[in-house]
Length: 117
Image 1 (cartoon, one colour):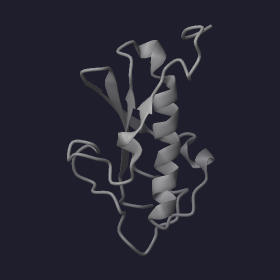
Image 2 (image 1 turned 90 degrees about the vertical axis):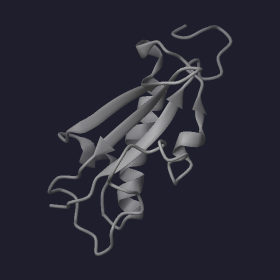
Image 3 (image 1 turned 120 degrees about the vertical axis):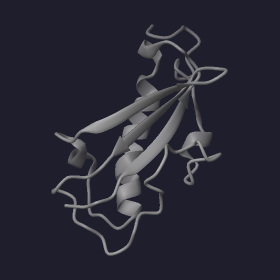
Image 4 (image 1 turned 45 degrees about the vertical axis):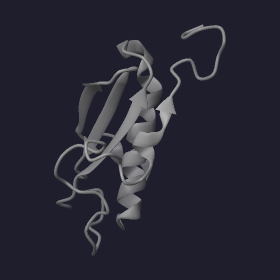
């Protein structure tokens, strides 16, 4: 079992929860990317059955979606510490350290027909 905690933040340009799916999906995928960058051997499926922590923060144009994960036994423990701090939420220090918080998520996915159409 590892004692690491990974946290990423993605931005949604909407304040409506039904529009946050893309930001949440990117954040969840980024968690396993961070684990691999820290030396863990994990696949995206490693998140199945794991507890993920969600924090939603209001912004001027929408919300920041922060997802945190402390890997369970299925992740192998690396020999180095993670590149991300375990204290606080990513983005509160001005950035995620990996560029994830700097990306804006368009809830319509570039569609001109509107969300959900």
